[in-house]
Length: 407
Image (cartoon, rainbow, N blue to C red; front, side):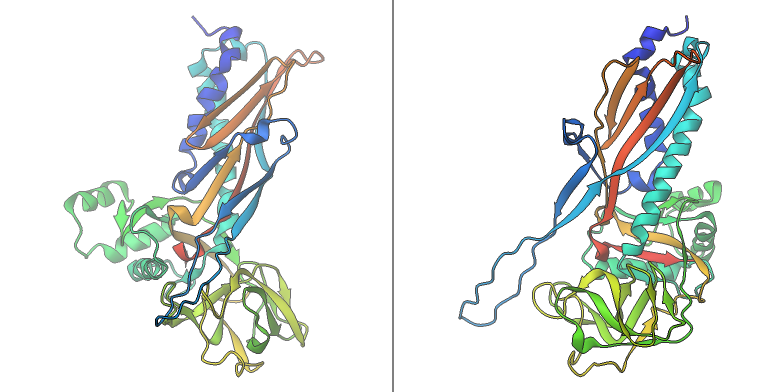
């Protein structure tokens, strides 16, 4: 016997919908997820903020004399304000279906579409905050050496060796398989690659495949600009850059500065690679000095030091702003595959308030993902409009634990 209308009111739809949504978001399933039930309470139904504590960092003393340092905890704030939803209109005949038939006809296609939209939005939000960019030949698909370089960047950032993932599109996946096929691999891994065409684990990463990996379009940068490093203050997110009035740096563009190197996070020893900076706000050259905003603060000294220059004072306006690793052709678009540890990114959802006096209001939480469903009767058209909502926020919280691998 088909499920009755009353059975559906008990929450079958939302309980059936959430696993389908969950299974169609491979990237979100692989990163840290947080759930907050406060937002369903009175006064918080329209969203709010969550604070994430950053790891404390300390300087090391040499010698017997104490040099006490203050503990200043810093937090990252992100707003839970993004809502994605699916709205469906049912007639009375639809409500007589069994929940399985109802799921196949309505919920599965709707949840796959919603899951893809949320996943795309999250990926396009976080990729520009990754601390590194890698590809040996931009405009071509990555090869195995690119995977190993990304691994090295995560190693240098002290990312845990477990729970690392590599998210690529199909063509990048094929390129990595082709390039690494002659290398030693366990028989089971080779069998999976041959039968399924998907890498299971490569270069220390669990490999995921998605066609939703974001595309980045470079700005119209034809010549290098200059940066006045003597103007850099500790903890700044702005650089004083002079570029011609034809130069445009788009959000997500990656730059390096001659003489400014990445440092080892604990000892602060300079590494043998230029530090990469990502543009956080569109910058248009004016021919004179103007502030360029970067995604992460630059610390040149202290416990949080994350860059090295032999002489910050001497490195004045002659310092060149260069493209990071020759990051491709101006105004061209490139696929941004991601190598990351799961805790590099956070995806947080919150409960929405459930209204009263409607035909149906249900809510469910699964694996840190909260979904709300509301259905009511439309007396004008004698139908049952239904809305499914997910309230969420996402952020990159550990930039050293992620790397863009461009195609």
